[in-house]
Amino acid sequence: MRLLILAALIYLGYRALKSRIGSGHQNAETDLRNMDDEMIQDPFCGAYFPRKNAVRASVGKKDFLFCSEQCRDAYLSGREKH
Ligand SMILES: [Zn+2]
Image (tube, rainbow, N blue to C red):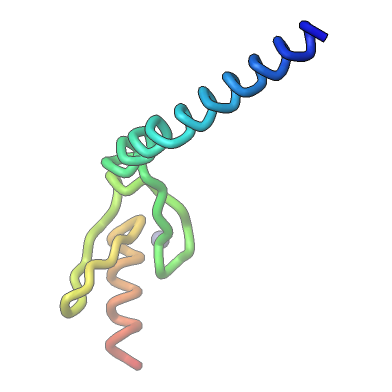
């Protein structure tokens, strides 16, 4: 009987600890990753690449990020033809 109470206490303590770690810590880690090494998708060729390698192009008020200058140029000239 004492063992059962002990087990219940350990279980409750474990649950409280787990939920506390789950909320704060994970967000900080995600924010850090978003700084530089976030993987983004090239809208032209569909390849994934790190944000820090991106070739940026502004179309109107929107910013597009491409994996290479070739993709950027092809995408932009493709848009103008439509
Ligand atoms: Zn590309």
